[in-house]
Amino acid sequence: MRRDVTGKYVVSNVAEESVQAFVPNPLPPVPPLDVSGQLMRKLDRAMQALGELNGVVRNLTNPELFLYVYVRREAVLSSQIEGTQSSLVDLLRHELKGQPGVPLADVRKVLSCVAAMNHGMSRIKGGFPFSLRLIREMHEILLSHGKGEHLSPGEFRHSQNWIGGTRPGNAMFVPPPPEHLMDCMGKLELFLHDEKVMVTPLVKAALAHVQFETIHPFPDGNGRIGRLLIPLMLWSEKVLYQPLLYISLYFKKDRAQYYEKLGNVRVRGDWEDWVAFFADAVFETAMDGALLIERISTLVTEHDEMIGGLGRMVRSVRKVHGALQHRPMVTIAAVCERTGLVPNTVSACLARLMQLGIVHEVTGGMRSRIFAYGPLLDLISD
Image 1 (cartoon, one colour):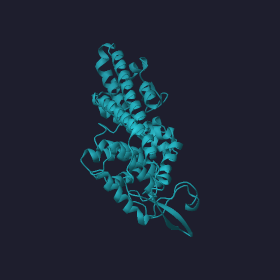
Image 2: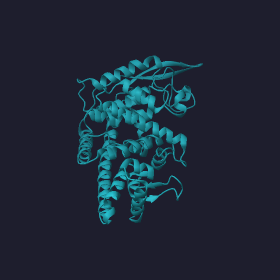
Image 3: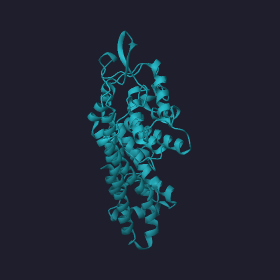
Image 4: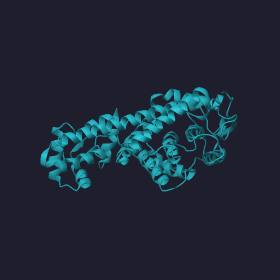
């Protein structure tokens, strides 16, 4: 359905330039979203996929194992959309007390993204409401390193920003002026908690994501925060059993279409087309997530069976194997700390795992050697 422009344009003065800035209408859309036909089928399919993902996660004996990896994978993908080159392996190596050989500035960005997501999960788990305060707290952590320190971490912007172009006058899009920002964000928060709004949590997350990116409330980090909020919203609404939905992978793959559909909402009011795209993203991401968890579980079980033939070393090797499942890139010292085993025992266990093809060394015999659970990393990084 086309609704024409979904907001109003107001004059914003930046330096000596006057530009038309866009102030979105509050949610929900008017006229109401037409959730019927193909869109309904897409939303139902997405919810069924989320149900399958939840079922797989509920059967895990240790979902925290997957949370550790998923949060980092999502952070890497979300940061790559913003232009960073850091990979998951780079991130894991740096977390081993800052191992050398990784792009430091990029990996710090990803680490901040991980920390912001972990903070959001911890706050929601502790009963803190999904709110503007939580969003600001996450943003403060996100911009805690590098150039972000000079961009008012944790504060909504007090100046005009823009998207694309070298200045507001040639920008692709100019969000609301700062004097309209708190009103826009306040109404977004009200929408998220308004029980009278007759939309499902999945649709609410889809609408809220567009609104947040349209308002663009921070000087920097809006894309990363906006994408991190999606699994947190669905988790807080009990749609996700755990916030294991790395939707940035879909947005990264179809980046041009993602931005096009966001723009179409603003200029044509085509909310239905955006929600359909969002539903497809959730469906594919949830199905891929469930499949990945099942493949990892199968891999770990196969390796455990291989370890079962090691005789008297089985117990110790299984402890080391368990540590590698939690942290697929380790040092001997890190394994000792996690398992309580002494260095010589850990070294012997890693040697046996290397003979089985489960583990390989990535540092070539240097001091502070790093060992990787290669088959697991290959699955995660695929």
